[in-house]
Image (cartoon, rainbow, N blue to C red; front, side, top):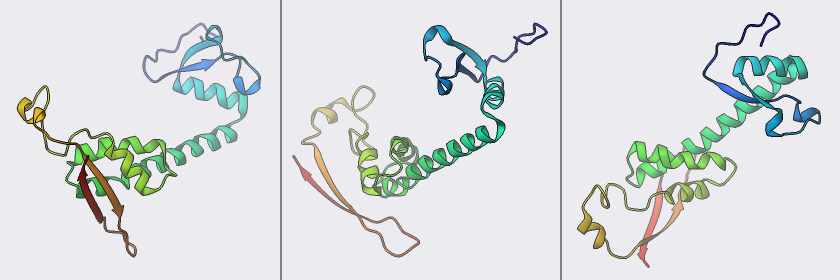
Length: 163
């Protein structure tokens, strides 16, 4: 509420705000929380911590987000080469955003772990039920990322065996 008694009309991009800033010793409790629009929350933070400090924090956050997106994007060509559709590869690669500093191999393995069936196979509730029943043993995929001189062209050596 402003000094003149007007309330912010924003109904989207709302954020939780600590009434007593945790960075200044306040308690993170439900009773000391309020909702603010993003603009007013950022404005209050700039008044408390300074505009330069908050700009530095926002830039840090942007760089970290770009790093996470880049880590996920590096996985997509490898999944595409294995035959996954672009939308499947993007969705699976999104799981890698939480581990941007992991090796490419670990990120690709994590992305592959979200697929419970081979690419392009539809079975289960909306697909061919008999194919699901007779799908056979699960495949174990061992892979080795093969990289060369920059620019790297995705290349995989994949060994499949039944287990």
